[in-house]
Every structure is written in structure tokens, then in C-alpha cells.
Image (cartoon, rainbow, N blue to C red):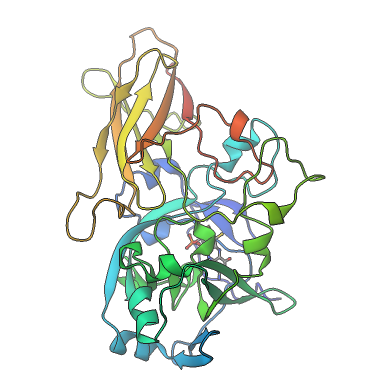
Length: 379
Ligand code: MTE
């Protein structure tokens, strides 16, 4: 059984599937940390987790146009290239899918808002690595990233990103061997994964085994026939996956994480206001400039307090790859039984979340980014 050798895992996760293993943290815990601890970082696996001996590990690189093909050991990667890092979100394309599913059924794992995390990834900058290999910028090429995890036909997990993103020094793409200062653990891609800031999780290939530079995207199922969105009127009889581009940059989103409506873990301030917390994020390096919150169905909106990385050397316009945490205290009356809270984030392009899932519904339940809404029973 290929699943006999899976890693030991956080028992407090909310499991979305056992085989392959997919799980997310409780949102109230997720939002307690600006840097998501590894044990609270969601896991999204399509296949059995490979068990890689670091001493035998090899990364193969093939450049189709020049015919150059080379392999690197982990020691090569650590000693021949400068070490660099990025604080970045990895967010699954299916994050918040269960909220879209509530409008009309979609196919896919029933993720809540926990299929994302914000970590410090350290390793080799892909732009340094490819430049050292003689790769020149070119608008038409793609970087195919293949994992060491394989399906029963021995086909590896694979996805691709445009070469322009890989070579952009401000794109901050990292061949990461550390997460939060520790070697990656097995579930997150030990010993090497590609971190592609601002881009959907499915392109951030774990257990990286091979990089191919060529003029086509990955032909994998995950690049071609999944992780794409369609009009709400497209159904499984009419869908043509070749007609939509693969998701790369993620749209703006926010999620209310605390309180949890099911657990009655409501916290109040000394003056009786309900503490509400969440995260917000936008792909493509866009900064969150505001999170608006309403507790009267949109009659009045109130800006939340934001916690985010400030602009500096490695964080600047177009390079906001970390998430924003936000909090606000919601006034409630003494005899009030129920309160509904909504959030919507606005990014530096002034893009904002759609009001409902109805008009952005898609059959795969991806890029589910409508307003976040919770209803809380106060009594
Ligand atoms: N890489 C490989 N090799 N195999 C996978 O199944 N899953 C992808 C991506 N990289 C996957 C992969 C998807 S869909 C997501 S959302 C992220 O990894 C999840 O990363 P995490 O498990 O570290 O949170």
C-alpha cells in the first residue's frame, strides 16, 4: 500500500480526506499567529507522501531550448547559491470552497477558510538559480515543476508557472528547503519545494524532483483539467477545460476566523464588545489596504485594524506576499440574541471581494472569495 508510510500528523486538524491526506486547522487557532506554525499549516496532498533520503536526493533541471540538463544535490543547492527567504502565503485554489458549495453543489474537498497559511520560506531564489544555468528571459516560456510523488501509473504531480514570474527578482520565487527556519517537514515537501508567492497553492510543487524550461505549460491533469474557473452557467456536461487559463495569481479575499459560530468561543472586551478577527490576502503581490466590516448587513461599514508587514527592503509595492491579519470590536446590545458580521477586503488595485458566491459560482468551487459572513448566537 503506497499510503503505508505517511508522516505523523497533528491530531487536532480538521481532516478533509484521509487518503490522500488533506486537513486544515481550526480558524480560531490559525488567526492567533502572524507566522503560521508548521503544525497549524494546512496540508494538501494529491498522492502518497514520498520518503526521500536527503543524501540521495537529486534535483534535475532540463532546459529544452539549449539542451542543457544537469542535476543538483541538496549540498549543491545549499553551498553554491546565496540563501534567501520570503514571507509568503500558500493558499489552496479551493480555500473557502464549502461556502460556495452552500449556494449550489461543487466538486472538490470541502475546505473551510483554513486551506492557507503564512510562513517564512528559505532557500535558493529561482531567478538566481536559472540565471546561473544560462536561462534568458522570454515571455513565451514556462517552468514545469515536477514532484517526487507519483500516481499509480508512475506519473508525477506536476504544475507550471510562466518563466517571466520565475525570473522576476521581485517575484520572489524560492526553491525552499526551510519553513519557519526549520527543514521542511515531509507533508510540506521535504527536502525541497517551490514557493511561488502570490500564486495559487497548486503551483507550489512539493518534493521537487525536476524543473523543465520549455515552451509549453505542464500537461498534467492539475495544470490542464483542474484549478481553473468558469462561468456560473458552465456545468459538467458543457465544461471545456481547454477554454480557461490555469489559475496563477489569487484574487483578493478575507475570512472571519474568530469567533467560531459552532464553538461559542466568543471573547468580549471590558466594555462588552465582541472581538472579531480574521485574515485578508490578495495574490500577485498586491497589498491589503483596507478590511471593511459590517454588523448591520452593509448599512454601515467599519475599517478593521490591520497587522501586516510594512514596506521596507523586501516588502514594497507589488511585493506583498504575506497575509494581513485584522481585528475589530463589534458593539452588541445587552439583550441582543444574534449578530451577523461580514468582512470584505480591498487590495492596492482597489479590487474588492464580490458580495455573494452566487454570481462567481463555478463547478470546481475554486477562487471562492465572496464576502465572509458569520452569524453568532449571543445567548
Ligand atoms: N506538490 C506536490 N508534489 N504534490 C501535491 O499534491 N499539492 C499542491 C501544492 N503542491 C501538491 C503539491 C496544492 S493543490 C497545494 S494547495 C499546496 O501544495 C499545499 O501545500 P501544503 O500542503 O504545504 O499546505
